[in-house]
Image (cartoon, rainbow, N blue to C red; front, side):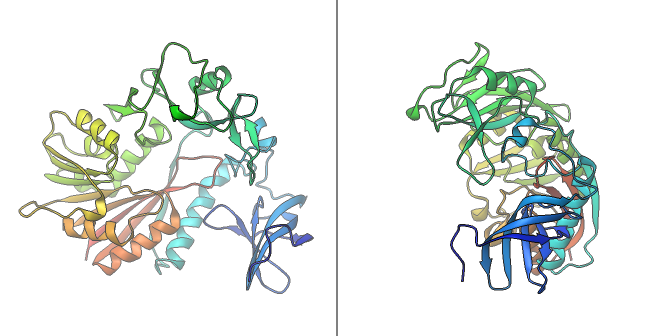
Amino acid sequence: MTTPEHPVDAGATLRPERYIAGGEAMAHEDDGKVVFVRGGIPGDEVEVTTTERKDGWSRAVVDRVVAASDERVEAPCPQRRRGCGGCDWQELAVASQLPHKLEIVRDAFRRTAKLPDARMEQGAAVAPESYRTTIRVVGGADGRASYRADRSHDLVSAEGCLIAHPALRDLVDRIVVPDGLEVTLRTSVATGERTARWDRRRGAVTGFPGDVAVGAGAVLTEQVAGHDFRVSAGSFFQSGPRAAQLLVDAVRRAAPELASAEAVLDAYAGVGLFAAAVTDPSAYVVTVESSRTAVADAEHNLAGRRASIELGQVGRWRRPDGLALDVAIADPARSGLGRPGTAALVSAGAPVVVLVSCDPVAAARDAALLHQQGYRHDGTEVLDLFPHTHHVECVTRFVAA
């Protein structure tokens, strides 16, 4: 039985032991029951308030650090110190973030995929500052572009955001946003172009410099792995071009067969990043994507290539008769492939599958599903594309058994 949402216990002292998926730290009460501690760092001794109790486990938030872990630092961003909820790991030393994320992924594969011996390796990380070239802000009562506070509907000004690209920080300082209206801002490192998108039915955002393209039809050009990519304001793109480059490199390492592959599936293809950047220019590529704007971008980005660019749900896709695929790549949303996406990949019949995952538990679930369908786990590389947050990316190779 769950207790009410208001605090049920305050003043308990706990010692967080390790991180779990979702970014909380796990501790144990004196009777052995598990507590998930928000704001705790392994090695801390903290006083907490319990916010939720269920049979066998509970959740708590840190009230006071009694003794700090060697890995605890002061949050480097002033907005985090004022309560911004965007970067929940800023109090953890940068050098410790990726190693902890590796252990979170390892634990998820052990517990969820039942793969205790899954081969894991620590990959690269983007720079911990100014790496985000897409941010979403919300208007405060004063019209300032803001972020939501930690565990609250309150707002904290986005001014000076540590992880936003300087070209976006400039926009944050300039624009006036109606109260409660969300605005997505994006810039290109390659060209300096900037775009902004919001629901115009909910109000007008003012203060944009003349170079900013506004609306769902606005586009910019970004460069990754020597390729130019058109990215519409309404299309998904990685946290920045450096993150996209690290993923491209990891996918190439996961499937060296891509260098000579004659036909490749890129599922959840977005703007065609992998189809363009990891395949030989002579290869035939099949992309499947449900976003109309992203499909339009992919058609532009793959112009001149032998390609089938398909608009639709990956879970409904099946390999056409007569098509032999050498490698299948999938980069699903946070929820993962699930059974429909797994069925689509299995139908591809490729001897090698590369799965790009942005949630460790979803990655482990998908690994289990692929294993059930005859694909063997053959290594996972863990990347940090979102420093100062608990979010983690991993690239996993599977081979047909």
